[in-house]
Length: 205
Picture 1 (tube, rainbow, N blue to C red):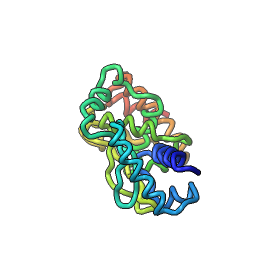
Picture 2 (cartoon, rainbow, N blue to C red):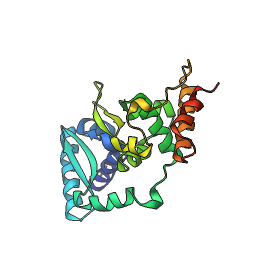
Picture 3 (tube, one colour):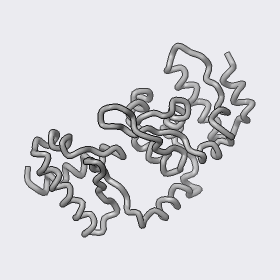
Picture 4 (cartoon, helix red, strand yellow):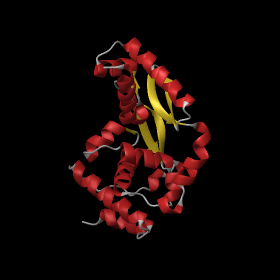
């Protein structure tokens, strides 16, 4: 693999790894190269981003690498997140949010195991809208990010605390629970139910 291709591949690996990023050793195993070489190439790629005025940066944290945005561009990202045309949540975001609300703190991998699909985009949307945030790191391989809801989440749904979340119906089937919470948040998004209606909805046979 030539140098230019290696740079391109490493950039792609960082993109698909999302917020959790990757360490040099893991990427070295993927591209079958020495970790020190991979680390040097990543640092060179990071300099390319700065020199070319790109909208992304490569952050090196605790031996790992991940893509980030330019700090000075934050006001534009906030305008996008709170734009009226972007105010509604997608089906995927609602499903992800419901899982986090009831299962927090929870990792991306755990969310994906429940939903059965990738959750990166939904998580990015929810973080951008300040509905979820990083609340710690799991005591597992790679120390994955743990997600939880924010105060803005409570404001968004008109709740004074997480204790006001309707109690899910006791069920032996996790799939049934996830389906019910998904439907609940879909209806909350449409502002079709009051809190009392929400409780009756979950208590209904």
